[in-house]
Structure formats: structure tokens, C-alpha cells
Length: 272
Image (cartoon, rainbow, N blue to C red; front, side, top):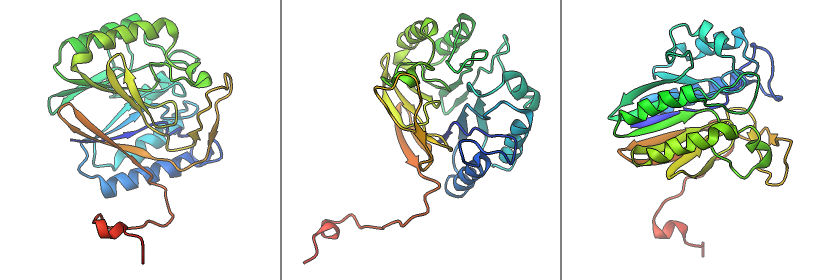
């Protein structure tokens, strides 16, 4: 099974820049690359910060952008999004009984669980008791699962980034829930950090995906300011085979030279 993971597209009112870039052009370029090279993907999953300021026109532009994509799209909201405005545009989008944008589906025997980790007027992540009860019910009812959300639910040793991770009062209980179900959880996937970071959390592998806009630069000493630059964007291609996963980072905006090299021993021999 092939899955496309995109995050942090930060769409604006069309015509407005975000961080010196046109986020709509970047997103459209990513979608065109996916349509050309990965039409066999089972899903395109976008883990939040769908917009930059949560404006209706930005969500309408997103709705129009994905309308022609032949691959089903699944979306989550992030800290730059507005839950009410999102749902007013995507009127048929599923929510849980409490109105959070939590939803799930089963693909090839794996439960894909999409989480709403947004708090009110804060960039930090929240996953309250009500949301944890919903997730507990989902995890208890499946043999294999993987989780997608916007915020990093663990600390990443990046002080400024970790200030806007899942908040401490929710982070511990969320970790306990993951640890309790680690045996049937294959992966945790998220965005938010605008960088590819991989590791293990509560016994479960995790991976964050870069942004289609600006990329973050890791600073292990800076405690206040996030650092980033308009470096090349990318998205992930996930290949899933049972509990096995391989993740490929796709630099869809690269326009420089590409070399083709053989794999035989002689192909790498030093010229005489």
C-alpha cells in the first residue's frame, strides 16, 4: 500500500504570500507531482496547517485544489487552522461526537486514525480527556493501527519547537495511551515541525514530514525563536506492507541536474 503524506501547506487568501513564498503554487506543484508519479497511491494525507490564518477563502482554495485529484484525500487541522471555518467549508467532513475533527478508516486491515490536536488560540498541541477516550476506543477495537496528527506528541530536544508540542498535561496521558497499545501500533506520523525527524516514542516508531513551504533549521540551544529558511520542500511516500514501513522523501520542487548512475561494481570504478 502506498500513502502520500503532506503537511503544513499554509494556504492563504489566493494572492497573499506566506513567508516570502506562494503557498498555493507550492501545493499545486506537489499535487501535480503526486498525480504524475503516484496515481496508484491509496490516500493523500495532509496533517494540518491547511491554512496560515484560518480564512474561509483559503479553505475554499484548498477545496478547489484537491477537487480534481483522483486519489482520496484525508485532512487534519493544525494550530494555524480554524476548526469552525474548516468545517463550514468542508461541510461533510467527519467529526467525532464532541465535534473534534477526529476520524478513522480501515485500509488493507490497518486502522488509519486521524487526530485533532488543536487548542483554542494557541500554537501548542492539545489532546484532552474527551479526545483520548475517543482514541482509546479506536485503538481497543483494532489489531493494527497507525496514527496521524499535526502536533509532535513528544519532545524533540528542540527547545523552541518543544514549547509548541503537545502540552505537558496532555503529553503524559497521551504517551501512556500509546504505550498501552504499542503492540498494535505501527507508526505515529505528524507535521508541525517542518522537518524530517524520525525516532521511537513509547515503543512506537514516529516520523515527521517537511512542509511544502519553508523548512525549519534545527537549533538545540535556542529556546524562544523558531528558525527556518526557504529551502527545498518535499513530501513523503510511505510504502506499507503489514507492519513494515519504508518512507521516502520526495523533493518535488527540485529543478537542478539529476545524474543517473549504474549499480554494477564497474560503474563506480575510478576512471583510469
